[in-house]
Image (cartoon, rainbow, N blue to C red):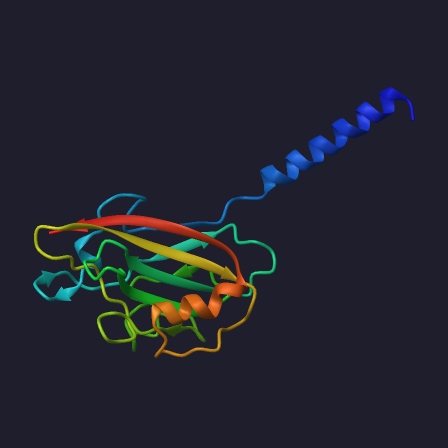
Length: 186
């Protein structure tokens, strides 16, 4: 093969690959209520245990999921909790693959704001619904929302599943994940 033809073929392949890479957007998670690394608003904060928030789960949107995504799971976790193992504030899973948004307050049962077919797992507050941040007075904690793109339509667990059980159940099905981090202190 002539050298000029080899070089033009290599250039064409490199351009095609760079075009594919540029077209693929990263898997991202966003919220209208707060930005990455910023303070969480009082609307999201728990009401109880000395906290005076509204306990409303935030609106979340995501994009850039990989091909083959059939469902999503979202967790809200405080790795700074003094329990030694963190604190599960919310899990919601079996979110259909064609959904790309959770409405604000979707974490409250009975509002019909969670996507059809989705389930909310058991939190460290002792229920299956969103529970906002409420660190001890004088503390500031980091909070992490994580969305998982999964290659299955649903996980074989129910609303009694803890965050740890959800992690085990989805472990072999994760195609990608994205996080959104915030802070709250009182």
